[in-house]
Image (cartoon, rainbow, N blue to C red; front, side):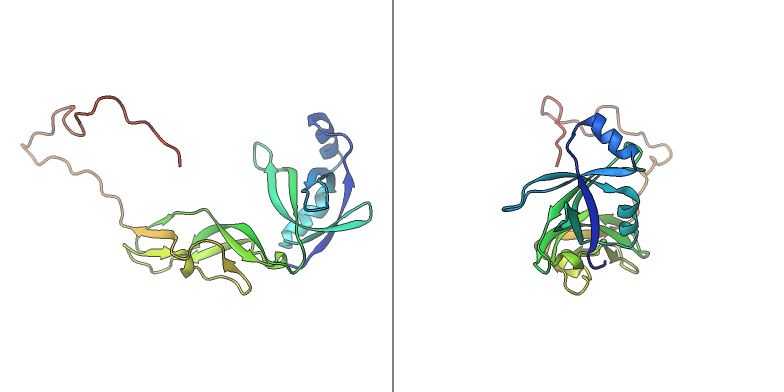
Length: 210
C-alpha cells in the first residue's frame, strides 16, 4: 500500500465504443469518477503508462486532477479486455482522505496444509482509511490438519484494518483427500442400473445459483 499520488485526467466529451477506441489508441484509458454528494459524475481519461506505474507501486489512494481541481479517489472497478491483458475502463470512487470506508479485497491462501484447502470466499469486506487498503489478504494454512475450519476473525489483518463482516463467517476449511469409489469385491455383483439414487419423486431437480 502507498500514500496518494496525483493522476492527471482529461474530460471526455464524446462517449461510446468508437470514442473509447480512439482514447485507447492515444495511449489513454477511458475512466469515470463517481458522483458523491455535491460532486457530479465525470467521464475522464487517464494516461495508461502513468496509471500502470502507480499500480506497480501498489498505490491505493489517488488525487485525480480534472481541470486543475483535485478529487481523492480509489479504484472501484477495473474492466479488462476479453483476454485479460489490457484495462479498457477504470471506475473511480470518490473518498475523503483519513476517513474510514468499507472496501472489498481479494482473499488467497499460502502454505501447505495437511489436506485439501477449500477457500469459501474469494473476497472479503474490510474497513480502513483509503490509504491503508491492502492489495489483498493472505491466509496462512501451513500445517493445518484435516477438519480445520477458519473463520474471518482468524485472518491476520494489517494494522489499521478491521473486518466489516461477521467474525464467525467461515472462510477456509481443510478436508481430506477425495476417495475413489471402491470397486465391487471379486464375485460380488454391482448395483443394478437405475437403482442407486432412484427416488419416488417425479421430475428432475433444478439447478440453483448462489
